Amino acid sequence: MAEEEQNASAEKLKEKANNYFKDKDYENAIKYYTEALELNPSNAIYYSNRSLAYLRTECYGYALVDATRALELDKNYIKGYYRRATSNMALGKFKAALKDYETVVRVRPNDKDAKMKYQECNKIVKQKAFERAIASDELKRSVVDSLDIENMTIEDDYAGPKLEDGKVTLKFMKDLMAWFKDQKKLHRKCAYQMLVQVKEVLSKLPSLVEITLKEVRGSNESSDLVLTSGSQLFNGDFVDRGSFSLEVILTLFGFKLLYPEHFYLLRGNHETDNMNQMYGFEGEVKAKYTAQMFQLFSEVFQWLPLAQCINNKVLVMHGGLFSEDGVTLEDIRKIDRNRQPPDSGPMCDLLWSDPQPQDGRSVSKRGVSCQFGPDVTERFLEQNKLQYIVRSHEVKAEGYEVTHSGKCITVFSAPNYCDQMGNKGAYIHLRGSDLKPEFHQFTAVVILFLANNFLHI
Image (cartoon, rainbow, N blue to C red; front, side, top):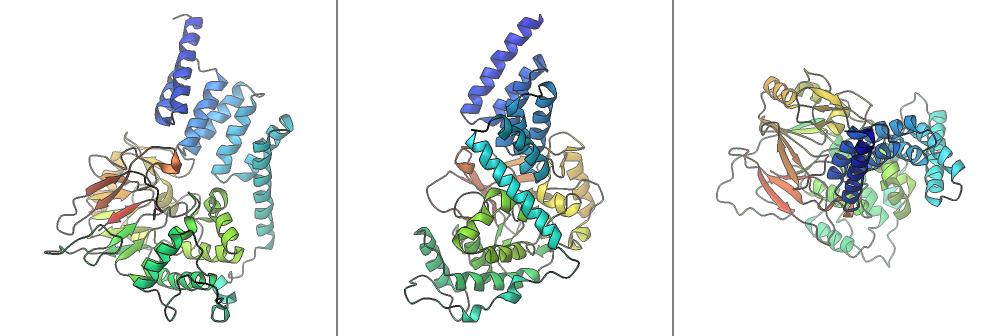
C-alpha cells in the first residue's frame, strides 16, 4: 500500500476511533487509534488521542507513554503537554505535571481549564514542599490526642441521629442512612466518635484477615446490607468518586462498629493521601467538616487491612498479585500497613496491580506496580495452597470478569462508573460449603450507593 493510501486509511480509522470515544466506548476507541498508528506511526495526534482514551480508562502509565511519544514527534503540540501533565498528575508526579501545565498556560493564557489545573498542581507542589520542610524523625502525633470529643456540644436545633451512650446501634444506623439520603450532615461530634472508635477496631486487626465460613442450613438469607446468617466484605475504593464519599465511608464505618465480626473492609488504592488529594475526598471532608477531620480519616485508612483469606482457599485483595514470585501469605501478614503505600513492593502490589491475559509480567498500564499473567496466578495459588483470588480495581462491562482459567475474578460494584461508563455493577455471593462464586449483577439507579466493590460471604 502506498504511503498516501496508508495515511488515508489511518485517518478513517482515527475518525472511527473518535466516534467510539464520543460514545464513551473507550476500549474500541483505543483499538482503532492503535490500528491507525500501525499504519501511520509518526502522527502525534493519534498518540495524543489514544492518550486521552487511556486517561478515561485510568490507564495512566499508557497515557503517559503516548503523550510523551506525541511530544517527541511534535514538540509544539500543546495537547500533548496537556495529556502528559494530566497523566503525571494522576500518577502523583506533581513537579513533572507542573512543568507541562506551565507550558500550556504560557502558550494559551486564556485557557481557563489549563489555568485552573496549573493552580491546583502548583498548590499541591508547594504543600508537599512545606510538609517535607516540617517533617521530623519524631513519632507523628495522632489527631486523636488533640481531640476533646466529650466537650463538643451538640446544638439544640440539631435533629439528626446521635450515638446512644457513645455507641453505634441498629437504630442509629437506620436513622443515619435516612439522614444521609436527605443530604443532611451528621453532627461533627458523632462523626469524630465513630472515627476514633473504628480506628481502635481496625488497628487491632492483622494486615491479612483470615476467616472461616461455615455452611448455613435452613436460614433465610437476605440481600440486605445487614445479615444475621452471613458476612459482608467491601473490597476498597470507598471514597473519591462522586459527591457523597464522606457519607458512604461513615456508613461503612458505622456497620463495621455495629457488626465487627461480620462486616469487613479492605483498603483500596483510593484510601491514600495522594488519591484523596487529587480525586476529591480531602476537599469534600474539608468543605463539610475540617482539615483536622481529614487528617483523622487518613490515620484510619492506614489501619484498613490489605487482604482477606476465606477458608484457607480464597484470597481477596483490592489490586492483585505481586511483582515478584515467592510472596506467601505469611509475607502479607508481616506487612507494616500503618503508612502511605510505597511505590513498589507487596503492599503497593496488593493495592495497584492488574491481571493480563498473556503469561509473565509487564509494565503496568497505570504506571504503578505491574500486570501479571495466568502463570503468575497459578504459581502463587499453588505455593500458598489456594483455589483462586478475588480482586476489584477495574471497571468491567458486566460488573465482573473471570480470567486465568477461573482462578482470577474481578468484581466491580459501581454501575455506570463516573456517570459515563455504562457498565453494570456486580457482587459475589460465597457459601461456606464449596466457595463457588455466585455473581449478581445490577444497573445504576438514582440512590446513594455504598461502595465500589462488594462480596457477600
